[in-house]
Image 1 (cartoon, rainbow, N blue to C red):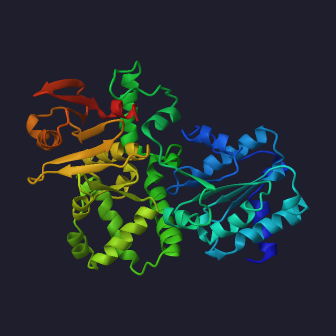
Image 2 (spheres, rainbow, N blue to C red; image 1 turned 90 degrees about the horizontal axis):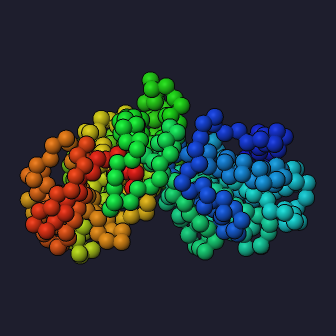
Image 3 (cartoon, helix red, strand yellow; image 1 turned 60 degrees about the vertical axis):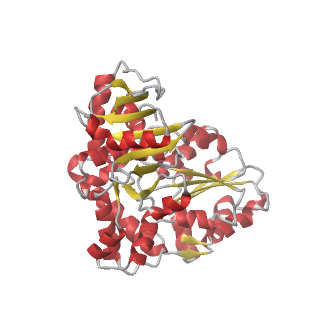
Length: 436
């Protein structure tokens, strides 16, 4: 891009230099990660925010910029640039910084006595961005880089060898249920998973959970009319496909990419069958595997592996697939039980747990197995009545691995049952989510 054109864009994206204010949505909440990010502004390492489009990365950036202004940082020393609208560029970061220092700071950036905060949004568009940032970082200049990206493969690869030990990466997820409550002015302290009790606002919280099931975790929906949510979601997915995935990876069959994601929405929470996918989409197994990798890299899907004491046995089994947010059900209907399982999975995934599923030889299944201080086993049965026959997989797993307790996620049942030395805790989905 020519210098003159790029300089105009720089100025247009930094109106706070003149106004002294950061433009943010009318109603926002501080995300769970915000307090940690504010502390990290005082550290040297590059801060990276990665996650799906529309989860709120740019809003978090704007809030950090506002925080700096409140703390009396000179507006012109807070720089923001979104690379989202650009074609894939090479060596543009140095060009941007040179234009900024020469035309706005009016002195070389290495002469600054105060820290300059450089925010680069959607940095995955720049080839070798890690090398460019490293060239500044290693000179020990008064520069703090904060970047964001919508492709984990590109961000992690770009920061790989270049920024090892120099970067702190935060994954930003769609709103959790507790963040959704906070947005709706319901503040509640986190509840201990193994000492659950109904909170005083239980009725209101359970009603809001019904809303959360419908609306999902994308904050842009919360201030948007219901009738346009589907089109907003479709636009976001299209941007992810055609501005991120196709622009970064070698995608020759966009119809397969779109078809694959549509299937994954409908089947979210189910074990996938590669042979069926290849036949349905009329393409090769290798193409399915590659495109799944692209969807995963762009945060549209996550995988859950088969749980086994043997890593080899785990790899022999097909994975479960979950979409990144249950609101994708607006594009392709998700059966209610699978939608609830998707919500539970994504809530636990956002805490950094590796999550597994399990099946016995009769295909009796356990939905979720993960390890905190001890193994946690969860079966999702979003029903008002649950029989022992509904829990065959759970009992089979507990017997196989000599585990004495498990959780069953329900619609409205809240009780503890003990049978043959096993403690089975039945917990409504909305109440369980207050503990994660």
